Amino acid sequence: MPKVKKKRMGFVIDMTPLVDITFLLLTFFMFTAKFKSDAESEQKFVIERPKVTADTSKVPDKDLAIIKIAVDSVTTDTLYYYELLNEADRNEVWSLTKSVSEEMKQKAQLEVSLESLNELVRNTKMIRTETVFAIDADKRLRFQYVWDAMDILRKNSATVFNYVTEKKGS
Amino acid sequence: MAGGGALKAERSKRGKASKRKKMKRVSYHLDMTPLVDITFLLLTFFMFTTTMATPQVMEMSIPPEVVDQVEVKESELLQLFVREDNKIFYAIGNEDPQEIELNKIQALAEVENLREGKRNRLITALKPSNDADYGIVVNILDELNMAEVLITAEISKEFDEEGNPKKRERRFTIAQMSEEELEKIKEL
Image (cartoon, rainbow over all chains, first blue to last red; front, top):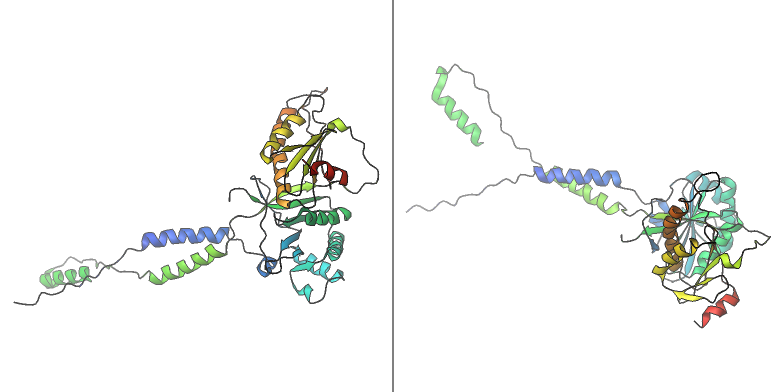
C-alpha cells in the first residue's frame, strides 16, 4: 500500500481589508496628531486639571503664556512653572529676566519662585501686551497658590486670563 | 502558478494549428507583508503620541487693583464661601450663611439673579478660603457659568424703553475671605 501523501496546505490570507482599515486609521491619527510642546516633554509632573462641563473654547495656541502650578511627584512640593509658547518672545523674555539662572534659561519651561514669576509676567507684558495668560493648576491644590498667581497677574494688569480645564466625562 | 500551467497545457495541445492569438493572463500576487508591517508601525506610533483630549479653557476676569471702593447695596449681593473642608455656604445680603450643595448652586444663581428687584443687578462674589481646593472653586465657577444660559435667555426676553432686548450684565467677583467671614462659617 502506498504511503498516503500528506497534503501540503498552502494558504493565502487576503490582507487587503486589513491594509484598508489600517491605512484609514493611520491617516486619521496622522492628521489629528498634535505633538507635545518642548516644555511638556521636559516636565516631570502631571497636572490633574479640574473637570468642567463642555465648552467650545479651546486653549489658544498663539502668544500664550502658561503659569503651571503643580505638585512635584517626588518631593510633593508645590512649584510654579512658567511657559511661553511664542519662541521669539520666549528668548527675549528669558534674556530680560535677571532672577532666573543661566542654566535654567536653556529650558522651554522655567521653574520659578513667586518673585521671578512676577518679573517674568511683567517682562512678557512688556514684550507683547496682547499675550494671553492661562493658569494651569492641579485641582487638588490649595486655593492659596492659585490666588497668589492671580495676584501677580492682577498687579501686572492682566486681569483677563484663562483657567485650563478638562472636559467632564473624558 | 496554477493558471499559467493550464494555459501552457492548452497551447501545446493545439500546437501551431491555433491561429487565434490568446492574451496571456498574468496572475500575480503582491506580497503585502512589509507594507502592513510599516503601516502598523506608523499607526502605533501615531496612536501613542497623539493627545486626544485637548484641554479647554475657562475665561476669568478679575477686577483690577482699584483704590476707591465701590459701594454696593447689600441686598444685591450674593456671596458664596468655600470653607477649608470644601463645604460651600451662601449668604444673600447680610443674612447668615447657609450650607449649599455644589449641584444646587446653578438653581440658586438662576433664582436669585432673576428675582424681582434684583434682576440683572445682583452681584455674585465668590470667596474661597485659602485652604480650599482649587478644583472646587473651578467647579463652582462652572455651575455659575451654566446658570448664565438661562439668565441670559430670560433677560433678553425683556425690552428696554427703546424696544431693544435687554442685555445681561454679569457682575461677578472673586475675592479672598476676610477673617470675620471665616469666623462666621467656622461653626456651621
